[in-house]
Length: 366
Image 1 (spheres, helix red, strand yellow):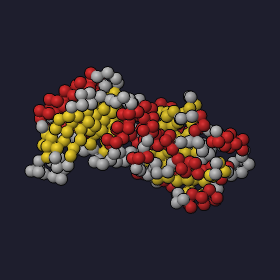
Image 2: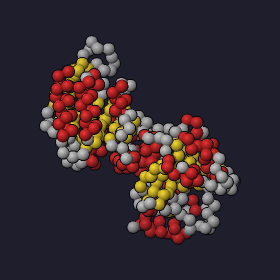
Image 3: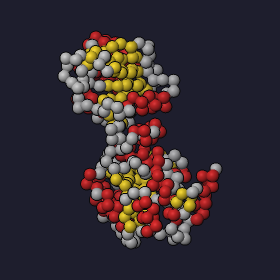
Image 4: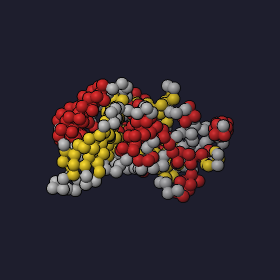
């Protein structure tokens, strides 16, 4: 998934829901860490965050700039004698352990809750005094940082801290699946509501758009041939069935995904058209960064859908009691459920009756 699809709002909603202290962006060269970090920093404090910025110029050197003073120093210079193709900068010990470490300590004492560090790479890890200054900063402030994705002990230590929400921008949403539940018979609506028009689009198109490009695999499970045809026309995987129970829809979706390689599966209702793409991604991002718990949306204390289940719940989802949905698994494990606040009550509103659809039409017009 392109990093550009991860909005600042999506990231901050996931991060704040997690309750973690620090927000770290990691990834390989060119993953967009610095660009995204600057956007996040502006959102956290439009006046600017204290901290440092480092940057490299190819075949020249690496520089470090302190935000508080505006002073910049060269902390490494290109050395063609070093083995390549990467890590060919020779560090300047005095610049890193002197000015660099002091700049971090000054940031730790600056007013405000947050500090920005862009970025931390292999050069900085070669000096214990500089690493200790970063640890001290993490103990005193909330840190927004970009960290190069390399198998170096100090970088791995930072990214794996228990108080850190770490996003790998090379694969921000991990390996997760999505089942779109589209098997309702629409008895109260008086027919197949999923093809009813809402602002020029079939009702089901909204959830198809909201879940686009967010998952390793996605499948629509439906008992309506017309819905199956619409999905196939968009090259969306679909399971057309005639099973009667909600538990059947869950089981068929899980089997179609093939869950052995997935770390989580999100279940999305097809009749919840105002669910925002940002909310789907925020929930998926939270599950990818901190896997292992059930995550679901909520509005003012009322839980709703979608719901994201981790791998340990797959077996229970495959063997639900007849007629039950994934909510039964969440109710069995209330201590394993975390909540993401929806943007509005309308996001969690579903369409059961014609009047529900008319209310949504009025809301969209307004």
